[in-house]
Length: 359
Image 1: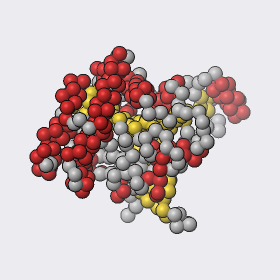
Image 2: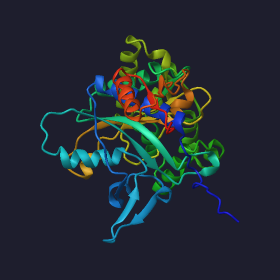
Image 3: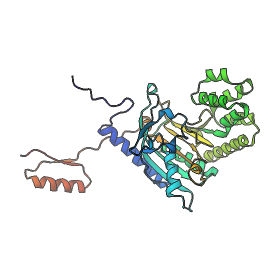
Image 4: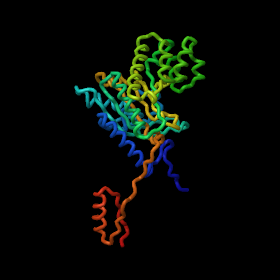
């Protein structure tokens, strides 16, 4: 019996057209980011365990391996933490901030295969390092919106949240840290039934409102008085200012506020957002602010960025990308002339192949 040539569950082969489409999309996005001043860098697909282990809410999703020296390594589950490591090492003496970086690469996770998640995913994204201003939040949000608008994603939208609103209110209303952690996990999973059972009475109405409802600026006004704590008030005011700027620039119809967005990583500190396209329940864009992450490696630098899931992005595009046609087949009798004519054709920008028959 012949051995079945199966690939690992949760992975896929990309054939000619799929590979060409993916590469075209990544190139277009990186070119777009470059126009904003973001230059591409690359990080290894394997990182030391310590670089990522404290940044992810579920370490059981990691692919781990041990090298010959005994170091525990991990296939990177995301690229933001490696980018923070790069900033803390290669740019530690840089004086000219902010620093704008872009990337494209693969990430790996043993996520739930039942939900259709891929173990290997292509990502492209940006990181804005060294600014905690409202204008830096707006820059990244606009880039995320434009990446959908200008590249053919139809009926897109961007949900906006803030850690100091949902998580801040949770910590204010629930004192027990173990209970906080359990509630936050249920919020991330949007398990409203379990939340209703576990939430203390004094916290139930406000927290369920935050995670079960989303909406426009009116929704933001509705929750404005849920807390008078300084961090909560400042977060509301920051989002109001961001909304006002985006509205003036013509983006208000594309955004909504959704405080069930909490992120899968422990390093988020403020703004959070997710981009959605038609027919896909999973975010095609995820991003946020992580002002304390780089400080774990070196001197603190505020930062904000986002990543695009390339496969989901391609799935939501309303435009056709096809393999280019072969313009010419060189069939001369003389072998050498075949190669020479093909070279001239390619120099003119054509795709040219030569006849491989020994006629």
